[in-house]
Image 1: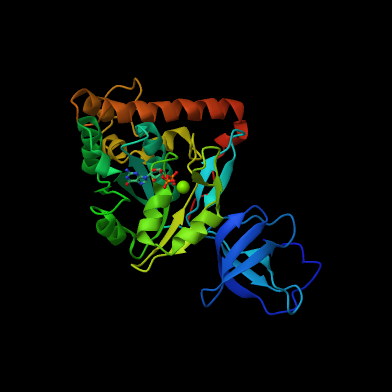
Image 2: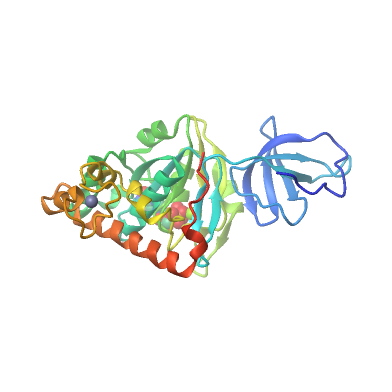
Length: 321
Ligand SMILES: Nc1nc2c(ncn2[C@@H]2O[C@H](COP(=O)(O)OP(=O)(O)O)[C@@H](O)[C@H]2O)c(=O)[nH]1
Ligand SMILES: [Mg+2]
Ligand SMILES: [Zn+2]
């Protein structure tokens, strides 16, 4: 893809770095030796998100702030669906999604389902973290989490207030570039602080005080963990919806539904009213949870709704690498 030539060439040779925080046009880029450099985006067409690999330099020798001239191609982007039916990148170049639920606020399992489906469609692995175990784990919660574990998602029980779980969580994050997602208030920033105490100052820097005086994350930021791996903290997205694939591919975001679908009579079965549907049979005999099936059905209806409102969506999307 050809880009317009920057009107002003950098005075210094370009270097490769990684976006570790982004506040609109203002970025923090970690340079080749790990230093954090304040940068601006060159030109209005460039858009960068946390995790992006970029080429940056200094417009004039001696500048304090760098300039980002190019965003390198993204691998495995976590995106969200906007109200206009478009896909908007949230975090780039991740390998693992960490869906965080907690004793409070009351878990919204449909939100977790949507994040897990988004991870599957983005080609990244996912784990579930249940935080605030110090406040207890209810029987209903245990049932739900056992079901996720049976599907194949690792489930980590932990408390950001101390053990248990932090060491186990660190093991899951080692060697991965992970993003913490989930409802606001589940303790994502607190978990980051427990894993990387030195992150606290940076967390404050990227947070804004709410009217109640609490700190809430407003932008994604990437932290290198001493225990291994990179961890991105993100603001909670209240109504997260992943960009939906074609309706016939929505089942691939639900691992147990995708597995059962191999036994359906029709290859393009949407597990609705088709005869010989192995998925519906599995729901009937309890092997697939009704709640997960309802979640799948809901996304299919959202997908159909989007197809009707945005006909261009029906074109097959470019394959994600
Ligand atoms: N009891 C308890 N409270 C926690 C725990 N983790 C976080 N919190 C509290 O939950 C609130 C929200 O935490 P925060 O990290 O900002 O959540 P985020 O919105 O997901 O980033 C804060 O008041 C934290 O002190 C935990 O493990 N146990
Ligand atoms: Mg936060
Ligand atoms: Zn079926």
